[in-house]
Length: 241
Image 1 (cartoon, rainbow, N blue to C red):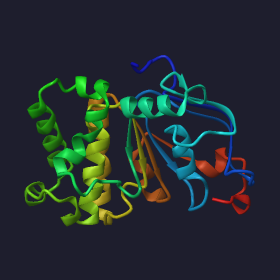
Image 2: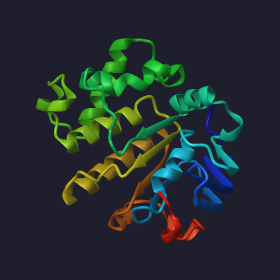
Image 3: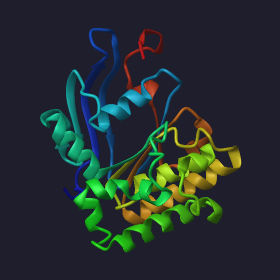
């Protein structure tokens, strides 16, 4: 599915989400992200940031509302089709990285292209070209040469693992990248350069970036900032998650 430049990449209307039968965690009347935007979404711990990302990625299903991503209403898809849609069109930088210790650095980065014909096609059918793009992204994100030479991701520092996770999200130029607190393990000097590199790679690929963090000092590096507490009608003291 190609990104439609005439519609928002993300569009939420009348969203409600609750864990089982508990009080709602999210109650959002409207939220939209335009194609090509680099948007910074912030809120304190417990405000529902990760829950919202789970809904947008199709991992969690809302109790009510319309959640449209790249023109696709996620609530109309089966679980299997949501999984396929996510692998084809969305790159995710997880808070816990989710790297596989039995794969090399390069194989961790190229993993999405093993599941997505759409993302693989953008790099060609040659495995060497796929590996080359993985190495380019790792070098672009300033992973040292000595780190690249290691095959075991468990030998990397936490900050280096975050960069591998970012390269994995970017490979194959997905239309949307969702980043969940991706700079939490980087020092202050490294955070700015990491965000700039991530933004540059997204701009190059015409990828929309939704970057989520509690660290409001990062907001100045993005085109638009949204406070989740302003669009979510559930008060923080009533949230379960």
